[in-house]
Amino acid sequence: MVMVNVNEVLEGHVTLDIQCLDRIYLNGYVPNLQVGGQVVSFMTRHLGYRIPSPAILEKIGTAFRRSVNSFAEANHVPLIRFAKEDRKIDVMRRYMAAQERVGRSGVVAVGVAQEYQNVFASAERQGTNGIPWFGFHKADRRVTCFYFYLWDTDFGAAFIKVCAYFPYPIKVWINGHEWAKRQATHAGIAFTELSNGFASCEDPQALQEICDRLGPGTIEVFFQRWLAVLPLPLTDHDADAGYWWELSMRQIEISRTLVFDAPRRARAFFEALVTDNLDLGRPETLEMVFGRQIRRGRLRRTQEVFKTKVVTRDTDVTINAFYKHSRIKQYLKDGRALRIETVVNSPDDLACHRRLEHLPELQSKARDINARLLDTERVGQGCVLASPAFERVAQSTLTEDGRRAPALRFGDPRVMALLGALCVSLTALGFTHRSLRARVNHLLGTGYNANQMSYDLARLRRNGLIERRPHSNTYDITAEGQRVALFYTKVHNRLLRPLLAADKPPAPLPLRRALSTIDQHVRGYIDDARMVNAA
Image (cartoon, rainbow, N blue to C red; front, side, top):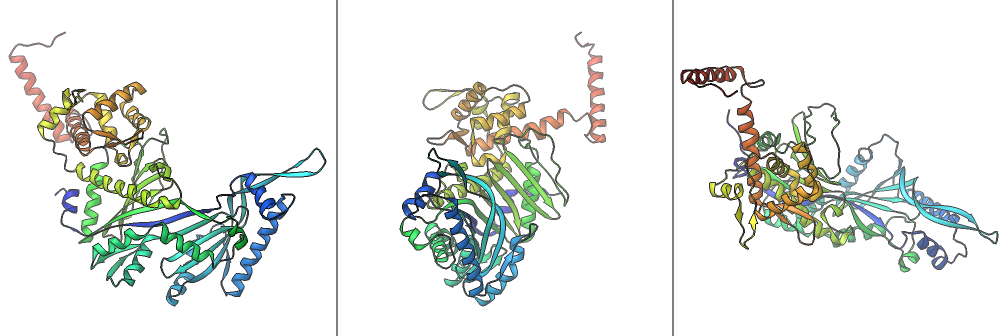
């Protein structure tokens, strides 16, 4: 059987390599309506009421709900009430398709749902003068939400969800690939489509430049353009006083798509990738599923412990690597392309602020993560370590500034656990003292304290295997660190450990018989030499 190598698949067989924002899910919020005092100020100073009362907010909400019904009726837009078990996009798909055939921007339907939202609740208290007054605080309440499903000539299918209760939070969903397709069409660039992506393009460089253009300005224009069309609970008078929505990032998917010259190349990549990474670092959660329910064991779960999940359903393979609230996923796209996607559920995970203006920084960091993950996988199947490099790490040496770099001796249980922890693919996102210590402790199986972790981080840095990010407690593994960690772990896990256990099951019976024969001959030589074992 010919072994397929990831590097062999990637070299010379990729016809298109495109990086693009994929699904973009945003929060719309009113910055000066986030605490109780601001609610009181809104009703008294802005609206002119003497007593801030929940009845005022109810009046605004009722007017908004009526305006939505009037909007739908006047524009002949279907008003659909979602059932609890409905998958909303499936319900709306036929309306989206109809509007796309028309080829004109418009509201295709309005969905109505009851959902839990973080809104303001009120508490009534009695004043010393006998007059009641109200306090306002945030709470999760089940309220009415309106989904305005849109078809936009620039973005294609999208929706804007508006909560009908104060402070009227908004959600916005758009797709970066769909935007890029329409911009490429406008620019006269010929391409063929993948589902939610590109299969080929006559001018890949121009297409990449289009994908790079999608940023906060374009998204903000889309958002404000549709707010001018839709019925809203806030008015122009409110906007003039500074009460209007701004956008922040809720979930951003940053993708890299590599299209292969033949579908078998894509399948070969995943076969090689899964085979090579099943045991490296012994991921805490590794699930192989063939169209069946995933069963979860009783493993200790720590939020900062890295977790890798490989899932196969039928012929589709997905690899997920989790870090805090975010993850990296890899999967086959339409059977012919590799999609690497960093899904950021909290910009804090990448040390970014949440406001939309910070999207370029987030996208840059996520693209680096996608690149590091692919580099890690390529190094994993090309880890031939030169002898001088091995000797430098395995023995104590001096750094360029004269400091001692302690040895990382092959076979030492603590060293093997430390480097095994660095093999987990999620190190592409970086790691901290705490997260790496949890992984090492799990692999080592014995006590491993914070002081030991600090010492090990220091010797990894002095040997050039990791680097610390500026002004941060997060570390990244270097290219040489990847090679050393994978070399140590592969040699130990795939050569020494199997060979040392080759005389016992599950080693093949012919191998065990051959080793038994060799053992008998060795014992015969020992007996002939009249040498006896020490007592």
